[in-house]
Image (tube, rainbow, N blue to C red):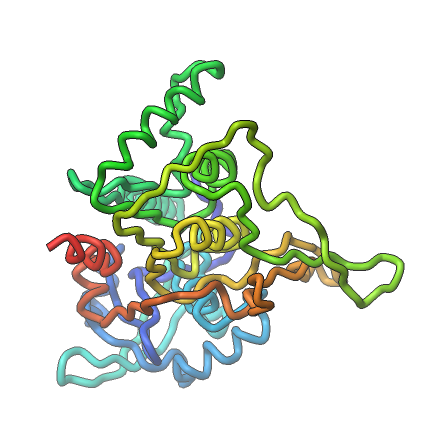
Length: 344
């Protein structure tokens, strides 16, 4: 995939925001980084005399996100290139490298330099490819990844999809654990909405309350009798008694949050683990503003049946998992580790 780099300058290293600092995770241009004495594992506390905490606070007033965890996720996404506090092509960084603290000058990558852009594109492609290939494989775990559910029906004729999925889910009943990885956006609504409901849910699955704007009384909302579940004739229930894990993080947004709430209802004994979700369920409304600005917000109200809020706050989580700097550097998936440890 060829990427467009709309901003003039990009970092010669990749990073992750952790607490109140940038953690250097990968040197994309080692020569530039070495000249600036930047190494993997270094902690950057200031950029051009502004603390990382101050920069995050400034960006929070400009970016359309629902909560702090989503803000950190967006600012940590390399290709978005949003962490820099100004347009200067060279930055002065305050760095902590082990016990050593120092300031250094860092030239950024010129997005008009074709050779450098090629390196950036290759890096982002490789990084995204590894992310796409990331999976949990274990003989006792039925693993479902919400952004790769079409894999279940690839090369399957339309008239055979029901039988194929029925055979697959019947086999899943014997697995010790089910793991629903909701850390992404659904590639196919039929998986969670239709098939998970069809094989595992009771007939009624009222897992949320959906409110839409009352156009007759602007500024107010009314309850909508939403299609919470499909109508399936002669539906049967296959009760699953094994362990069920629902993995979430700030990439769990909108439809992913909606389907995660459905899973929580279908599997009441499930554990939802990870980090705060986007808190952005309820459809997307865009308003064009002067100056080519776009204001985005959710247009409908989404609550749990007991009226608990989901927008801004995100969905309910049973176990919050926090990553330390070394976990990030080691590319650990603590959610996967939690699932695997449950089988011991």
